[in-house]
Amino acid sequence: MDNLAGFTAFVQAAETRSFVAAGRVLGISASAIGKSIARLEERLGVRLFHRNTRSITLTSEGSVFLERCRRILGEIEAAELELSNSKNAPQGRLKVSLPLVGSLLNPVLAAFAHAYPQVELELDFTDRRVDVIEEGYDAVVRAGESADSRLMSRQLGLFQLQLVASPAYLARHGAPAAPADLARHTCLLYKFPSSGKIEAWPLPAWSGLLAAGLPTVLSCNNVETLLHFAESGLGIAALPDFAVRAAREAGRLLPVLAQHTQHTGAFRILWPGSRHVSPKLRALIDFLAEHVFQKG
Image (cartoon, rainbow, N blue to C red; front, side):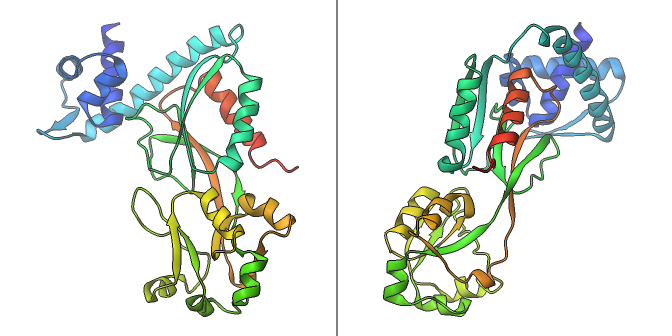
């Protein structure tokens, strides 16, 4: 059992790149993590980490050993779950980070809560790029790809950014015929909270237009706010198709520069790859994949 504890401490330290963070996950002190790994290194006769005062990094031997340990711990977790899954319904707390697109996710999450009443959802709506493992999330939902090799992912569905404006706005200002015409129109922009950068509109000339300066009355990090401003006739916005579908069908918003827009994005759910997927997390992954972009 000491060997198993050493493997667990090593994997957590490797994934979080911190004895402190590993100790937080395992509920023990950073000192205990360090001593456990030191004993493991002494027993193996190799150095697993390069250490300095501010960080730790894996040695080449440590990288090879990490993959072996992940498989060992994964097999142990799988064996435990196989014994318990047949009689245990999904239950317990799920900590999930989600993007600020409540119109897309809230109905599905409510349906999941009805379907699995024994699962407690702890939901954090933010577009900040969270560290899934270090911050203790069971899963995150995000647009785009992930460069984090520690995470597994599953695509939930595709979406497109569309330029839209209200009939009242277009009646007052006219519809732009080409991207360059946006210099004479009011633009409603999405700003990423983590970087402060403006989200690119799906136009081939976007970077040049933004650099030249666009008339702007709003920049914010909330899709629902941009949607409300656009419907209120305050300008042109670039919004995902699922967010504007109802407004377009009701005639409250009209497409702008549709022949010039080029975009396809994907939503994914991501979770720590070193862990066997628990029944509660598997239930959430499958439910979101089935229902988030379900038509009708």
